Image (cartoon, rainbow, N blue to C red):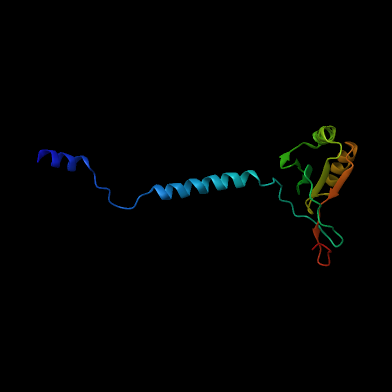
Length: 143
């Protein structure tokens, strides 16, 4: 009889639900959100001006997005770049791919001189494909 009681003492009774399925689901959710965050395209939030005759943006694989904030700060793909270095950075991108497309996004509250400085640097770098991003206006043709 001592053997039976020793076996019973070694066995432990688990009470309550198992947490393993919950841990599996949590791990899958973590993996999903980590992978989903990798594919998000970085952009800087700017308040774009309206344009009645704006066209939909064509999909570009190698699109260089240059954003101008309302206080005149310049960003390339969400990375701050001093205006003095902008032309050099764009020239490096053009040297890598001569057909690189550049999209300029300027906040509607930014001073026009910031936009002109960015356009001058982009054109000076030799960019061929240049797009200015706007929001469709009330009578715009954007679908």
